[in-house]
Image (cartoon, rainbow over all chains, first blue to last red; front, side):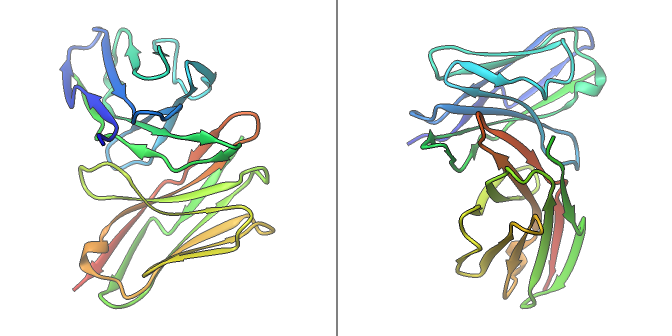
Length: 116
Length: 113
C-alpha cells in the first residue's frame, strides 16, 4: 500500500549540470503529473502522462526540461544544463483516470532541488 | 487557457471561528475542483473535492460549494482548530480530451488559539 515515491528527496548540484528526478506512482494509477513549487509559491503544472504518452507538455518551462514514462509506471523528469532559477521542489502526483472524470491526485513528498 | 484566482492570500481567524477561501476560474469546461492542504515542508493532501454535477459537498467541518454559472467555488472550514493552520490550494481540472489542471496561488491560513 505504498504511496507515491519520489527520489532523491534532496538534490544539490552545480549550475550547468544535468539532473534526473524519479517518480514511482501508486500501483494501478495511469495518470501521472509533474509540478514545480518554488519557495512560498503555488504549484506550477509541468507535464501530464496518461499511460506512457504525454498529451500535454505545455507546462515545461524550456527545452532543457524533458520527461518520460515507460511501462506505464515510473517517470523521470530530466533537467539539462541546470540554472539557478530551476531551484524548487519538484512534486509528482498520480491518479486513476477512469470514465472521463478526473480522479483525486495523490502527491509524493517531492524532490528539493538546489542549484548552486 | 484556464486561469484560477484564489483569495485571500492570507487569512487569520480565531480558534472556533469559520474560514472561507474562494477561487474563481475562467474555463467553463472545467469540471473537477479539488482542495489541497499543505503543511510546511509537507506534501499537498487532498481534503475535499467537488465535481461539476454537484453544487455542494460536506465532510465534517469542511465543505465546498460550486457555482458553475459564476465560475467560482469556495472552501468553508467551520469550528477552526490550530491544526487547520496550513496553506490551502484550490485547483480546476478540465478533462476534455485529456486532463488539464490549473492551481490557485494558495491561501495561508493561521488559526489563532
